[in-house]
Image (cartoon, rainbow, N blue to C red; front, side):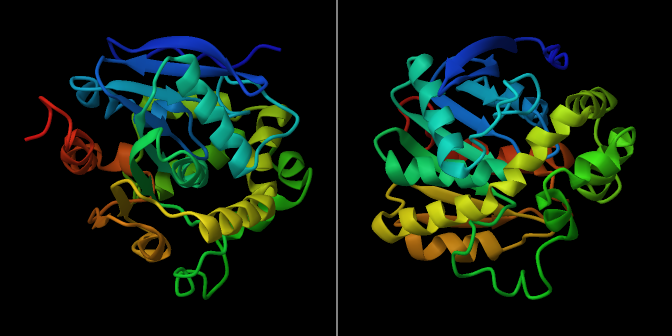
Amino acid sequence: MRLPSAEPTSPGISLRRITTNGITANVAIAGTGPAVLLLHGFPHTWQLWSEVMPRLARRHRVIAPDLRGLGASTRAADGYDADSLATDAEGLLDALGERSASVVGIDAGTPPAFLLALRRPDLVRRLVVMESLLGPLPGAEDFLAGGPPWWFGFHSVPGLAESVLAGHEAEYVDWFLTTGTHGRGVPDRVRDAFRSAYTGSDALRCAFSHYRAMPTSGRQIQAAAARARLTMPTMTIGSHPVGTALERQVRPLADDLTGRLVPDCGHIIPLDRPRALLDLLGPFLAAGLPGLDG
């Protein structure tokens, strides 16, 4: 099976194939220094981070995988629940020889980032989570008052979305990219990479498997939150539409939480407002590191 092309989009970014938890992950790596692991969402690949990786790489070793089943990573039959994705990330850091890392997740990357931080506080130095919800944890009731976004149900029905979208994947991906940037759109090279990554029935099956695993992920999140806390410095970042809902979910579980909002920004923060995101990430990730703090 030929997976989509995943060529680097910026100088200094290299791609590696790394085996972890029964899959082979396509991983973009840049820079040297303390590790930062970036976990994307839907409908994205590692190139979601292409606008922020070069600046982060000035001070950090930046590690941005394609999540299981997405981009050029293995299109696995299963393992799309948050706990399995956290295990993927843990194995990836181990394979790269990283004993600790700051972990940044957005959208579908947030639940595995959260679970990894809860179960491996020795591994996760700092945690940043953005524009997502953590299953049924309290705090997001206002956001969910009208029900979850319409596509959650559409994606959750086995086989349905794949059938309906066949031949129209590009238009569907474009809708998310346009809506997620308040109409501003994303760079052509990134848009084309996302379109390619989500074209074909098997690519769509893997994408929607992340949604079909949400009930399992929700139970995993509840169980983990009942027995552990976030002991590392944590930041939540909201924009539109999630806003402060994620912060409200995380605050009762975190010993040290900073909540931030990015104004006039769509859901796809790293591409819609990369400079504003870097202004938040840079100082937070560098804090406490010799030679980087301040």
